[in-house]
Amino acid sequence: MTTETKPKQGGIHSLPRNVWAASFTSFFNDISSEMVINILPLFLSNVLGVETAVIGLIEGLAESTASLLKVFSGWLSDKLQGRKWLAVGGYALSTLSKPFFYVANSWLAVGAVRWADRVGKGIRTSPRDALVADSISEDQRGLAFGFHRAADTGGAVLGLSIALLVIWITQGSVGELDEGTFRTVVLVSLVPAVLAVLSLAIGARDVPVTDRRERPRISFRGLGRRFAVFMIIVGIFDLGNSADAFLVLRAKERGLSIIGVLGMLITFNLVYTFVSTPAGSLSDRIDRRWVIIGGWVIYAVIYLGFALAGRGWHVWALYGLYGVYYGMTHGVIKAMVADIVHPDLRGTAYGTYNAVVGLLDFPASLIAGVLWQGVASWEGLGPSAPFFFGGALALTAAVLMGFVMPMEARE
Image (cartoon, rainbow, N blue to C red):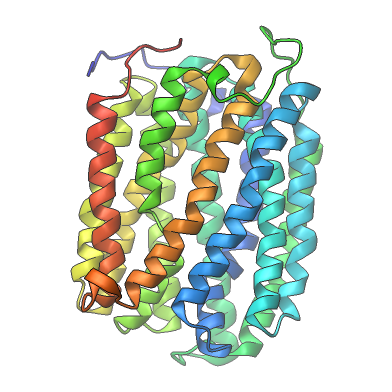
């Protein structure tokens, strides 16, 4: 694996308008989403009495059923030669679905609203990622995606802080989330959700892309061998990467209160925010695989820690370090997708990537839910089992990325 250093490029001040618009949109959207989604497992568990396997089913099914839309929306953005309005429409659908969390009173109702929200994500994600890639040169691609992820997680920090404040005001330091508090958080979350839609609709512009084929088609083979190998390796990793809802449940199971859980999530997102931009910039100067491999190894070590954690503060500390893995990998992987494929198929490539990762959320979360309850050969491990499983697959993927992934920049 080569470690040749590339020339240092300009900072975030040199990023174009579209990157800023997409970043502001993600910032506002995550203020809204993180207020609700991170306490949703607690609402399901504490208020509605839902078992962990059902929570895994809700999370996995919501992501998986929406994921096929990511392929279609990415391909459609290639075909229409336009990314912006598909992305705006997806954000708008998610915003329209959020008020229904306020009236949901069963796990089926919550699952339906969660599914509608993820359909919106399925529509917006691939065109938005392609819009960012279209708007930036290759030598700043990692920086652009890293900054986008930093804005996204900065919104999460603010959203979680607002949720914590609402919970403190409405129910004090009570350890369990109550129904009225959850519904109040949902109402407050609607304001930044609307701002997210407006930011992209007003601030972004479509970018003409050269080297575009007449009729791009959904063709995994057409995306090239290197992309296929990349997706297989990412798929192996993601099969062990269950919904983070299980980390929230692990924290509760180890003794953290609802206030403690939100503090833990804020710590995670602060770390994620501060790591994302430097990690993305680093990947513009060295082989991006090194950054991804480093993040996956850190993930494996942290998951081993989650498996062995004996106290709530152990989980809090590990979850903070978990932000290092996120910051090192999520933006850099998006940049690497653009490196691998031709510009005329970026929407299709991001659609394929997002769909594969999203579809694997269903088996990954379902496996985690089953392993948590301790079945078959995992009997007796209980809540530790999914973390051992995820860590083992992360190490496997890291080895494959280093020794199997082709090195050439583009086919």
